[in-house]
Image (cartoon, rainbow, N blue to C red):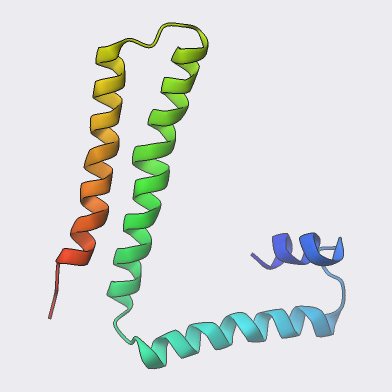
Length: 103
């Protein structure tokens, strides 16, 4: 994260000690504040995992594959139904994270 952000903002992966220190301090501060106000790290992991799973596991591969088939004019109705059903399963997984309440 630091390398990408520093390169994006200042055009260098190590602009100066002070900028790197401030960046690391801010990241650490955000983590500590999350720990203070939301000490159940499992909740954060559950939501991040559901969002990531929806995007990277269920949606992007299916959409990319369907787009490739569509460009080659090989996308059939059954292919589309199958891949859309996979995306719907991912959406159901994502929604279920908000319906589950662990104690």
